[in-house]
Each structure stands twice: as C-alpha cells, then as structure tokens.
Length: 228
Image 1 (tube, rainbow, N blue to C red):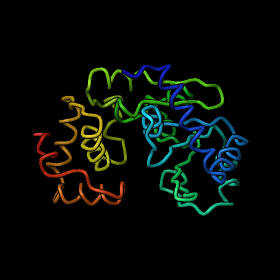
Image 2 (cartoon, rainbow, N blue to C red; image 1 turned 45 degrees about the vertical axis):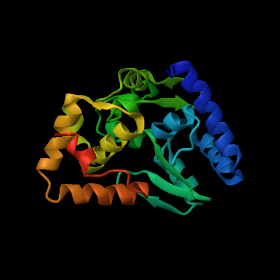
Image 3 (cartoon, helix red, strand yellow; image 1 turned 30 degrees about the vertical axis):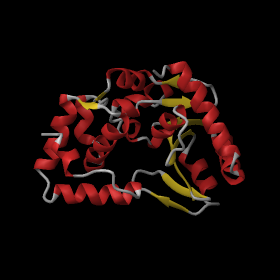
C-alpha cells in the first residue's frame, strides 16, 4: 500500500528521471522555476508513484499571470477558457496555470495556498499535490482512497455544481474505477446518474469525450451500467 512518504520519494524520483530524459522539457521546467514555486498535481504523481509514465503533467506555478504569459510567449500553446496553457514539447503534454487561476481559488472557495490545493480536486483520488521547491506533499485523501478502494467526491458539496466539466467528471469516474479497481461512493453514483439521466445521447457523448481527451476508448456500455 502506498503511503505519503513512498509517494513523495517515488513521484519525485520518477519526475526527475522523466524530465532529464528530455532536454527541452528539462529546460522548460527550469524556466518555470524562475517564475515561482512549482506544484505538480493529480494524475502524473499517481502514475510516477507506481512507476508508470503519465499521459500528461499538470503544473501549477505560484506566480503572476503576466510572468507566466511572458514565458509562454516563446512556445506554441493552446490557452483554455480557464486561463491555463496547454503546451506539447516533443510529444510530452504539459498543462500549466498559475495558482491564482485555479478555478477553486479564482471563485474564492478557498484561500490560495498550497495547503488548500487538494481541496479543489473533484475526486479524492485526484487530491494529491507535490511542491517541487519545498518538498511538501499533500496526499492524505489519495492514500485513503486507495486504502478503502473507494472513489468519492472530494469537493465540498456546496461547490460540486460549480465545477465546469460535469461530462468529463463522469468519464473520469468510469476510467478511474477501471484503472484503480475502485468502488463508487453513493455521492459519485448520484452525481453521474444525474448527468446521464438529464443528457441526451449521454453514452455517445461519453465515448466521444473519452476518445478526444484520452486518445483511446477503454469504456463500454457495461461500465456505465455499473452506475445503475
């Protein structure tokens, strides 16, 4: 069973080896570090902690939007509607945004600080963050999810409906259950059912989102039926 110290050690080592294997990515990280503290979030840390290569890396930078924008002007990027930057360097996908543009902080649900970052994660298994500058790690909700084999909604109930991507959250719930062999909590089942029951052609939308976002399709109708 993964514990916090093991996650920190394995994720730090995996990330270091990963970026050193690519000179351009290593240089990009060095540039980001000059802007401010770097915090790695979610899926990449999960994958590194079990010696897998992540599909992409989510990076939060504790800096101003102006400083990050100046840096990103040297790269070909796609900016999303939430103020983040998606950049691909030698086939490695990196999503970068400032701490102030984190949707939970921007909406003033929590004070912008490292200790509050995982509170904005939608699912408990996503509630993991590592500060590369200080070495601080917050992985309690993540390790609890693995221990209990239970996928649950981590976000405060008051803010759930404010999350801007319900369709992606449903897809992610189905894929996370399959990848990590998890059960669904009552809250997850209720949330996913509500979207499915109130969306026309919901199954088709799920498969299309999965293909667009992940580049593959792991799900089938039987996976969705587990919600009922």
